[in-house]
Amino acid sequence: PEMYFGSARLEYLATKPKATTSTQHFEWLAGQEMNQFQLEGDWQILPEKAIMTSNKGRVRLRYKARSVNIVAASPAGSSLKIFINNVEQKPVEVNNSLLYNLYSEPDVTEHELIIDITGEGFEAFTFTFG
Image (cartoon, rainbow, N blue to C red; front, side):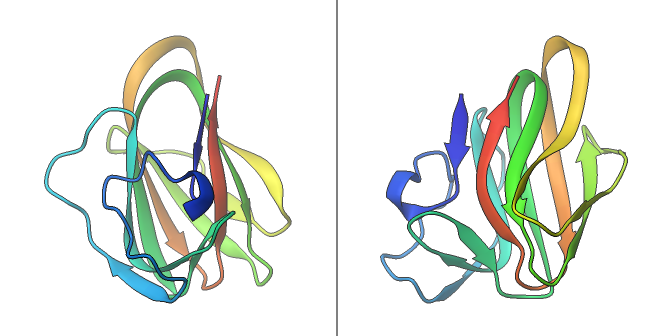
């Protein structure tokens, strides 16, 4: 399964963006549904990706899987602090457009993922799961 950040296939974002390609400010809603994600900060939602236009932002996702990955890019470079169920994991450095593993474990279980992003221009395309 996959979850897309772009407006062409944006069905799992908890807060629906306005119908514009201009930068929008997002804040987290109270609570978090399973298999949905939320954005925080300033983001531009394009048909195939979401671009963080502020220097800092966050993404929150609740999911059930063994592993979670993100297809992302950051031409200027971005640092991701990864938290699974409020426990900090190994950070991820994003530069080239690649599939980045954010977390893996042997069993299929429910998790809350928080990605704390630093670096304007971070581009998110999709979450994938294993």
